[in-house]
Every structure is written in C-alpha cells, then in structure tokens.
Image (spheres, rainbow, N blue to C red):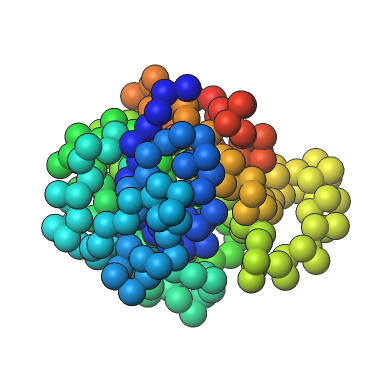
Length: 228
C-alpha cells in the first residue's frame, strides 16, 4: 500500500472524527482543517497535523494543502432535514466549491467526496446540492472518488434502526429492490472503512469519477478496495 498525504476538510465532524484515526492507523499522513475553537477534537497525539482555516473560503487554506496528494471532503450540515435547505447550498455546496478551488490550485492527484444517494423521494434540496457538487468536481478534471451513502447510522443518528426490518423487506421485493438497495442505511464504521479504502486505492484509472454507492460502501474495506 502506498502512503498517502491526505488533506481533510470537515475533520471535526461526524465522519471526520472517525475516519481520521482509521487513516492514521493505515499509515497515511493526515493534515486536518479546523476552526481554532474546534481543533481540540483532532487526534493530534496520534499524528494528525491540525491547520486552521475556513472551509468555505479557499483563500484561507489553499496554501496549506501542499504537499498533500489526496483531498478528503467531509464538510456537511449536521443532522440534515428539510428545514435546512438553505444551509445545503451555503455550507455543503459552498465548501465543495472552495475545496475544489484549493485542490485544483495544489494539483491534487485524488479528490474523495462524500455526496449522497440520488435521486431520492425525500430531502430534494439536500441531494440536489450534493449532485451539483458532483458536477462541479467532474468539471474540474481532478481524478475523483465519489461516495453516495443515504443515512449513516451512529452515535446521535440511531433512530432509523427502527426502519431496518422495512428495508429488509423492500430489498427483497422486485418492484422496490433497486430503490431500497440504493437508499439503504450504512453504519459509521462502514463509512469510515469505505473512506479509507477509497484513499488507499488512489485515483481511478478512468477519466470519469469512481462512484461508490451503498452496496459498495458496505462491501469496501482496506483489504477490499472499491472498484473503478
């Protein structure tokens, strides 16, 4: 496995706090962007290098990206809901634009982006903002891996466990199988493993992004990296 130098935005968030220790355990070097008041969340003692900046403003952190070769974009509004439609554009989409700008200026070799499964019958403003982010990333020409979970189960995000029996049924009925599989639940541990596997595997060999949907996220691990 080749050691990667990974720049992480959203490092102190729900996914970042779990993915970074996994990246460090795999031997990757991690430089994590955080606001000064949030840096204490980072596992500095384990080798994570904190840098301060504003994830919505490329000028505040673009110069800090080198010498990283991999960019991991994890910024997102906490606990998405229909009431946060405006934030999906002013935070989620705006941060993606800033990250792509910074990554392009730094000639990043591989951009890993957590998008969301789409289309979907709910949370239209949410998945449309993430889908627009995917198009911006494609247009940039940066080799990319795009992960598309729907809901990530974990601490503070456990209520959908009640839906697991319904998903089990829907995944086995032909009329609902595709949608239920594409929009099924993944765990925080599965997401962390999939993110590490995406970093491990490096940029896709094809000119188009590597897309990792829910079945791919469930199956991915550092020993079983996602396919292009």
